[in-house]
Length: 283
Ligand SMILES: C[S@@+](CC[C@H](N)C(=O)[O-])C[C@H]1O[C@@H](n2cnc3c(N)ncnc32)[C@H](O)[C@@H]1O
Image (cartoon, rainbow, N blue to C red; front, side, top):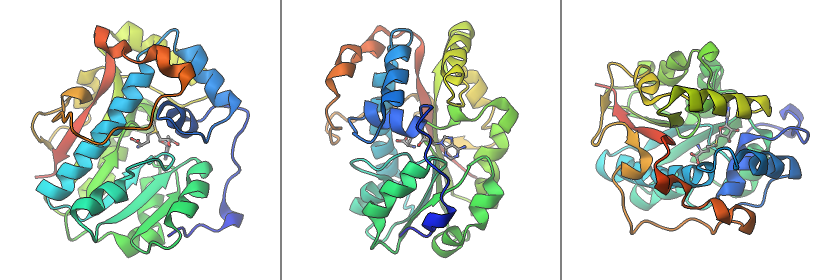
């Protein structure tokens, strides 16, 4: 269900790349513009890992949501920075294991709402809202959050491949933990972000991507860990996502577009740039 009226929607930017559209292209999607493709084609010669990283993250999403429903018994999700709908969105994965799972999708990019409308029109247990996750109070005050999320029962809050969109000036610790602070014990946080083991490489990546107009901060794994004190990481802890409960049998993603195919496999070289994350429990 989509509650935001067309009159409230911010306009879609066509002159700068957006994360939702560029990421969607790497997953095999078609909802993007030349500005998004040019952004990636100028980034990949410097950071060829990006295509693998995007796809590894999306595969992690499936495994994390499967674990959260099937093993952890979670029935409700807040998906911050959910991205454009593609195959196996959170509500679709969750409902394979918990048929009445409820999901609120949140994204800053209005194209997500436009496409979510088609996907969720008749679905009363799922909502997509356009909001800036940096304003967690606004997210929590949204009527669809009140309608679908019961804070007296454990909730899973997802920040998948979005923590790098929070700069230190955004106070990422506050953003990541506002919902958890109010949620029932046993609630879970799923998160991931692009990291660089070498801070100088990370700074170069940050300069390149944020210079293109996409808010971005590559961190080191230790900088991510520092945001999460007091939470209990589930096995195997916070890791390169390819090492988070790998499952060669999980559903395959859509094929990679031909222009991006040369970059497939770039992370095999273990360059020290990868997507880092995991699932943590509120005690
Ligand atoms: C790389 S995509 C990840 C999509 C999805 N979470 C996944 O893991 O497949 C990042 C998404 O975060 C969204 N995003 C970036 N900054 C945001 C903000 N401040 N508030 C809400 N969404 C944001 C982007 O629009 C984009 O859709």
